[in-house]
Length: 316
Image (cartoon, rainbow, N blue to C red; front, top):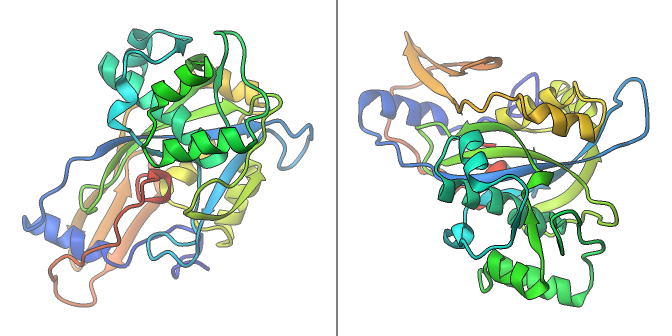
């Protein structure tokens, strides 16, 4: 049992006080920052229970005060340079992505770019190639690692990295899956777009994140079953996206079905009902929580800073 719950839903102890402060008008919501996360998929070749594509997941270090031990996907916030128009680009146009993601063209490029960049930074997987119909193979080696580290340290922009390598970003390898926004009562907030992508042939994942202590390939059915038993700790957006993926038999099927996914943002709602706080996520009743009041409302307790990877925070 995680955090006193029958399942593995992560729930910060400071949330009730922050929710009461928001309701009382003493807490002003901060503007969410844009972010992206990618559910990397690979086919398992199996049938039956737990079949379908496996998804690559990271587990946040258990020693971390914020969501320690929670499973999530590679991802992170948009870099201010991710909208650089000089970036090598292949696949649907920026205008097409703007319509799909519900933002302007510059914002669409930045979000897609962040998805590809963060996947490379945290999992070592690069959705790019020398041409618009090719993908790089092995991305291991000292020279690749040096470039990856420079990206992480923001010494190198993604556009510069691709230009140096003679590569173009393959936006057609991504499928937009969902959009979740961190609740208004959180101290750090993210507006996060979830994508799906198949692991390119010849590449392999690795744990390149400093915030994760392990990585796993696991089918959505296995992951959600572990969550339901209280064995795997996750946040609502992670569970919700896994449940959606469980209906797909292959990575290709998941990518094909992404086109029909509803991208309406999901934002948690909190209200006071008598002596309890009621927290809910529209369209996802399983995550509704009723938190009894055990003491008078107090000032919001400062929470641990949300990590750069929004998939390890309340938004993903």
